[in-house]
Image 1 (cartoon, rainbow, N blue to C red):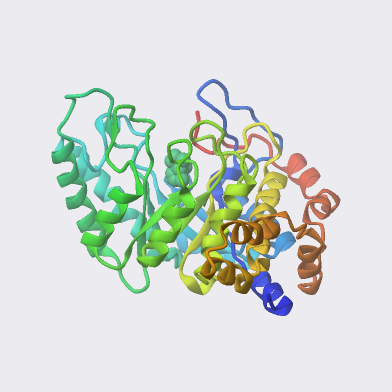
Image 2: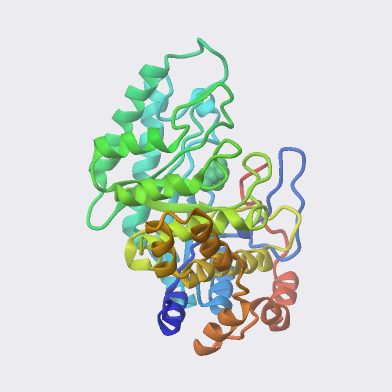
Length: 388
Ligand code: PSV
Ligand code: MN
Ligand code: MN
């Protein structure tokens, strides 16, 4: 049987990191739709992230993307974040938007471009030093479009060399998260296409190197919860980039396309007992809100993760263990489905009330006047940088 007080305690402790770029304008390669009141600079992105945290009590950090969030003084930015009540989450390195990176960044055949890319990654570690961020998130757009274009083996060598140099620069509790993605922007092969490739590089490097699972970066039908189970067991699951997808890297709100998949993922996390922040696993959103209102969409996303987690926490693990031990296939599946079918919204309302929060963060946001304020104050919001 589950202990209701322990469930409420774990839910109250849950931390979900929100990404600075989700607060800015975004779109597809066809069109970026501007929205009124979007942040004009990193300071305003942080201010919006702080609003999400104040209303949900569950989003205490905001991830930055460098150089999209470039400022002169990162320590100042971190100080401002702390004043707003949030911390700096992962530092996301952008080594994909310069013309130089046409044939890749750290795996580019040209050593000058590789040097430039590694220097950009090292500069991100400087940002970590200045902000107190623990995690460097590495995602490479590197790969090829045509068979024969470059040596896949040589590119792995170049990747290893670059990762080694960055790894050696980490200190204290810093670590890096190596994110994989099956395809896009490279269409024939990607240099880090899957969790196995990421994991192999992390193993070679050492314990500060961990895998980041972006839920939108797999082939359709991939059993993501298996990947979760494997990496948790191996101690190499560093983070999630949560979002949801119908077709490819859609970056829709987590839990919107397939709430059952999100539950199955969180169930693996809870079964392994790694759902609280002390697990070292960062639960991050990586989303773009192209047509929907941004802050409400991020609040909704945080709530979706909370709901999946609550269902997983309520799962009757003793009954599941008994059914498994007895070889009762249907019984085990029924225990799991019962948990999934539970309406956890009243429980989460109670948890919020116990934290002194409004039980309905979305309605509270609409009542807060924040949206009207930012629409009046902020004219000429910037693009997130992604999807232009
Ligand atoms: C790439 O598709 C990705 O998921 C990486 O995490 C980037 O850092 C993020 O999107 C934002 O571009
Ligand atoms: Mn991602
Ligand atoms: Mn992505």
